[in-house]
Figure (cartoon, rainbow, N blue to C red):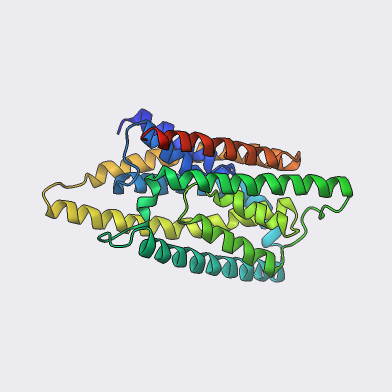
Amino acid sequence: MTVFKIILLAIVQGFAELLPVSSSAHVVVAEKLLGLNPTAPQMTLLLVMLHTGTMFAVIVYFWKVWMRTYFNSSATFMRFFKQAVWATFLTGIVGETLKVIIEKTYFHGAPKAQIEMLFGQLQIIAPALLAVGVMILVTGLVERRKERAGTKPAEGTPLNMGQAGWMGVVQGLALPFRGFSRSGSTISQGMLLGAAKDTSERFSFALAVILTPVVDVMELMRLLKAAHASAASGAPINLHGAISASLLGMVFSFLAGLLALKWLSSWLEKGRWHWFGIYCIAASAVVFYLHAHGF
């Protein structure tokens, strides 16, 4: 893979991951348009490392506000800790359950079916984009109605366990379905349950920081396993090249992610959340079109 393609994918990932428009969907489509195989172990490793770059962007961007919000006292930290553990636990339960169901139904009878095969299937990505687009659009319209009625929750209002738990459940739905934006769905879920939009945003990205290292380790193990199998078959994978490419992409996704977060926060503050939903719905139509034409 050329350096140009790596940087292009990193920029797409950096913006799409931290805007509620599904980075995985955009990166998969970009890979297909560039003639790359999204299901190859090297490519899925690159995708995960691009996520890692955006994770560091999230940490840098939210660090000060997290310190003020979650670490200003032991009681505040314990409340956040319990909510984060509860939400992440539910994410794992929902995500793993869906994985098993999909492997036993959609991939029934296929040898060693893997959920990663979903990465490259546009016929699944398109309806997922449509679903999250509708969710974001509805959330934005409800938020604008609350603002006009004067019932909008005050900024900085803490989450309760129920709100945190449902955000974790929705995050679990995003794990196997590329196109169902993790940030878009979790922030929308929090807002629909009555949480303040700034609180939903902060907690959503805190959950992402917790989840990303786990996914990174799993993906690295998958790559090492594939490399061992390829070496045994006489067609070794260039591990050094795959890791080097992934690290380069991580740097550029970090930079793009910082810019995307500024954009996201600005649009949340200005009540433009629904525009992301409109974009996702339009993007789903494009993905449907690409699928129909053989991509």
